[in-house]
Image 1: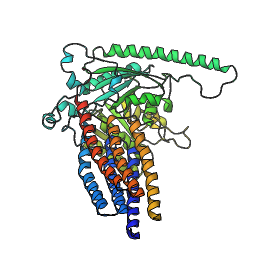
Image 2 (image 1 turned 90 degrees about the horizontal axis):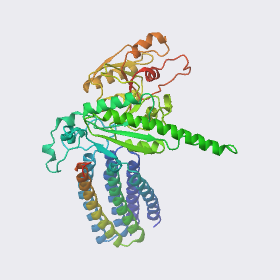
Image 3 (image 1 turned 180 degrees about the horizontal axis):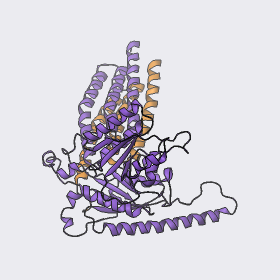
Image 4 (image 1 turned 30 degrees about the vertical axis):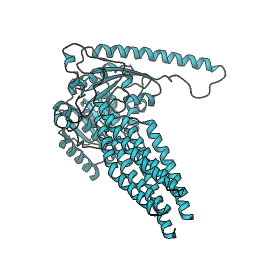
Amino acid sequence: MSAAIEILAGLAILAGSFVVGTAALGLLRLRDPFLRMHAATKAGVVGSGLIVIGAALAIGGAAALVLGVLCVVFLLVTSPIASHALGRAAYVSGAPIAPETFADALGGILPRNVFDIAPGRTTRSRNPGDAASALPLISSGVHVMTALESSRAFESPTAAAAPLRSMTVWLPGGDCQDAAIRTAIALADANGAKLVGLSALDSTAGERAEMVPVGGLAWSKWLGDRARLAQRERSALALAAFETHTRNARGDVTLRHAEGPLDRVLAHAAGNDLIVVPAFVDHAGRNAHDAEELAAKFSARGAGPVLRVSRPVDTVRRVVLPVSVGDASARAVQTLIRTGLWRDAAIGVVPVGAPTDELALTVARHVELLGAHGFRAAETPAIDPDADRDSIEPLLARADACVAAGLIGRRGAFDVFRLDPVEFAAARVSLFLLP
Amino acid sequence: MTFLTLALGIAFVTLGLATGAVAWRLFRGPSTADRAIATDMLGLLAICFAAAFAAATGVRAYLDVAFGVALIAFLAAVSFGVLLERASLRPRGRE
């Protein structure tokens, strides 16, 4: 083998392994099955093709070269077919689409199932009344048809119009639980969405991770037992409330129970279009505020759109959307568009901070984008965080709902003197939508 | 043979790391579609391993192995896709 061919083979193998490594990294890090497949199939074919060519060159001889070229041609022909089949299956099975993807080009063309990460865990399904159970398939968004006739037969406008197809309402107990359940049921009924009541217990509550003094172990265990007992009582009350409220619900309502640390329990709610969470509680059902709240933690873990409810609202008329320069407010706007909530409400896009050109441009873009998606959005007078508190409060206090990227906004150096509109809204506004 | 040996060494390490990443995705999910995609990618990695091994040992039979794995990986991916699609189109909760 000549040196040139050897170097060529080495270069091909190096390039191929680089591409394969990149593809694996994409499979690991990208955010939804479709993006992952984009990385895996395209890059994977180029990578393995290059390695096979390199190997054929290294071995040398006509037979090896023919076999290598044949292998590459075969990969090029079959890979699009395989990835098409997998992508179609992922779409039909309702795999979640990352929020960065705006358009769903297949919406209304292929049937799309309600995503359920663990169908075996559903404890029971209830269809109250005979009249209601005649139409359960349409109301739950599950469409039955064979793959062949799907492209023509799928013209049901209800499924295409409703952006909310599956919802979870979290049942940790607490003062706002009743409001959360009522809001979730009203939304599920309006959208024909499948509703799951998830009663999640923190089995690690009260356990102390740090060292305990001598003789303190029994005391720590006793405290943990007490905490779990109180939590079970709150949870039982919440379950009873859910049972009472869903007795007359029309749609597909199920109940699940899970115990464990927050991350593990949160996996049960993955892929939902909306998670409804009562305000001011943490995972163990205790009172909590700001970053300790369930809603803030879900949002920080990227669990999907979270609706935090503190009081029930019949009709949402006024929505505020505090906008500051940066990615955060853009994420809030995307979430609002994706969930399709409050289309009939007046959405006030509130500039926060000093009036700069960048802020004005951001606000104008958000208003335009919301308007293009059919929302009634308008710019409102700006809020200056350093200004007088009394003049700002009326702007926010009248709102029924607020959309923001987090429960805690950006604080200045002296947060004693500044009014953070997001925190202000988190304490007072009844409905709070988080990405 | 030095440059090719070096390239093969780097390639084997990269492929090993890639296999780890793909295996993690296969284990973690979260959805069935993710696992199917990871399985498909594992097939591609097997092709790469067989080809790199062929280059390292100089035995042409390993290239035949790569070709065979490519064939089987294609069939597996297509049948996974069809299976997943059928399974999710079945009405749930009334079996």
